[in-house]
Image 1 (cartoon, one colour):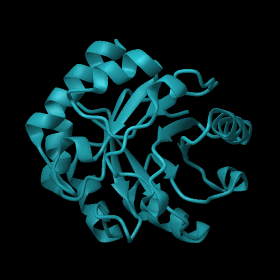
Image 2 (tube, rainbow, N blue to C red):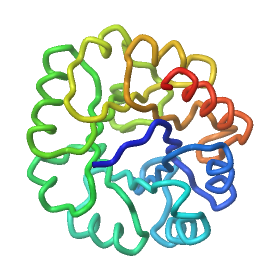
Image 3 (tube, helix red, strand yellow):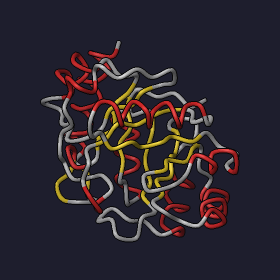
Length: 212
């Protein structure tokens, strides 16, 4: 099982990874979706993991519809601690991955979202991440989900809240949803893929204050 309270996703450089670690974040997300504005190559990601203290943070690889053999190869080369599926992957893939699997679910209506949570937790997903439905962007859009709706969902594994979170609204979001952790990308950026240390510090401090 993987458990964290704060995750900064879409880190693309060693400098930003070190700044994220300095902010006190628990997890760093590395995005391997080529169409993402926060995409990192395997070589870039490996340099990041090699330069950042692995005892200080966990590294989570974000994948969208990559062939399973590529996911396994990238994970081994980079040294990922967990895999986050953010595309149209199937539940059968959970058993093919050695690391814990985080399943990102785009929140639509209450019933279908709850059924999707149950399908993935029954299959062995280690955590569920709730994100906004951004169409083919697969996350990182800065769009908020319906917190009231999300707060009514039931989950038996750690629940991570994403979708339009910022230092200013993260406390309100946590109070409404009561997740186990939060995930931010665009809300702590100067521009896509370029993080702001002050925003990261503020986000982490605010989230921890509310999460306890």
